[in-house]
Length: 253
Image 1 (tube, helix red, strand yellow):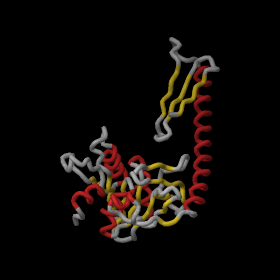
Image 2: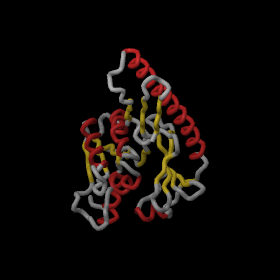
Image 3: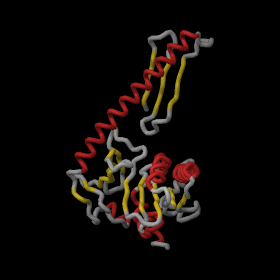
Image 4: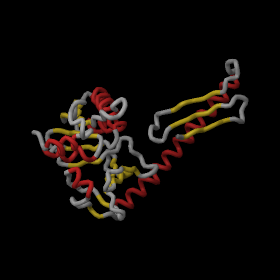
């Protein structure tokens, strides 16, 4: 949570935001029992605009620093091997991702022009962390070969067992909130391709963000959205993604 307070003016005001959801913003203005005067409103709007401008400038600097760090670090890491505990448990292959000196998988986040923006680490237990300050929006990891379709999904595991079976180009969006931005990039990169969104079915999370964001991205980009479970499937195992389906039921053509 990010909070800015302005109490030096005539009317105390504040802005709250969220690092994980950059578009989220909540404003607070003290109740003075009347409407603001023209001067007070002008001062308020000026302060809000200054805060927003500084926040955006700080964000861009942080992203640039993180991108440089990611580029340098990823270049020093060895290729991950197929015997990493997470890959073994998920029945997937590394497909060119890296491994750091702490034994964590390192998945680069790459923009439409092939530049590394950031990376995500995955430890043996499956805990995932993004590089602090790195840009995720619009970034993806691409794998497999260009064939007759282009597909993207939310996380690493579903990619390699659902889409790679058919040799599709796969763009990993990392996060359901990033689906629409990656969808836009996919349409620009592959304008004639048939696109499928392999969204997570977060049936154990309120609001099912995977399905909700997947369908929204599909509607916005005029592409096809594909979810992987009905809520009655495999409830004892609490599956959420295509890789869970593969591990439980095997490959289904």
